[in-house]
Image 1 (cartoon, rainbow, N blue to C red):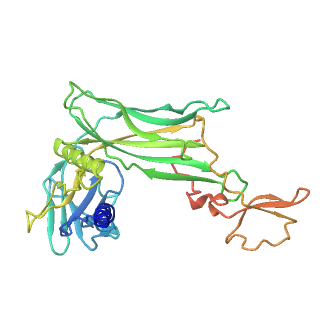
Image 2: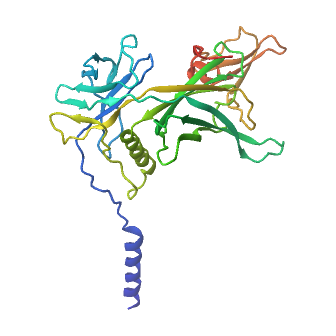
Length: 372
């Protein structure tokens, strides 16, 4: 009897602790859908339309460009401009021949070889100028033992349309910063750029006026070298229709809530592109048309609490004159300090090329817009 009781208890423990089976939900693989990313503005610049195929749920996300398409933009007067494929899936306008016109109407046509896709005419809405783009320091931590706090940077914008026509806004930005290696090497000063990743939109139709105040554009922590030397950000402002605002709001909500199995899951958010042969076929993405206003600011102020981003660089010391050979030089080891003129002569080496050559992480070509 006692033996049977022990056996039953052992079996119950085994069932509770040992029979945990991973649940893998069965997700029906969807067909590949066309994804369209495109924006045309009233600037003298190259406009891009990017075409790709969606990735079914559960698959590795890899960009799948749609090559060899015929892409063109047509205005309300029947004038059309054909786009050229400059890289797989990327189709561009000729900046010398095409420029959007405020209040003009534009439609996009895509022929993939199997299907024809089309958008209804989209009006290029005017956009008011940005009132201001500015920043404020943000205290990240209390002062340390040396009395130095850690600081970050929050960038804001203000905008206002006195006509009240621009009720729905969207913004993006391009940030560029200068960084310098703390060693006397050939490629010491470089610049690096990055684009915005978040969806920045605002609906002012619920207010009495089309005004935006202290909209948070971008936050910069002290965990990057952006604030170390000099930083610049170019903010672009677009005017949206209500339909396009609704589209971007859905995309933002989905991207912000994707998480566990029971969170909001990604969905096929349709835009304004339609398949002519199969109208019920979903097409992802949006063909955006808007005038643009831009403002650039520079940040030169010193920020407290920035770490030493190159403290890991020195990895070895070689004593001797410059004639002493160094195995693996400029292959697996690089000189960051040459003290062969000292007594005793020595050189400081690094195993990390980015410590001896700033072009590993940026470009040593000064941006044409950069100001001292």
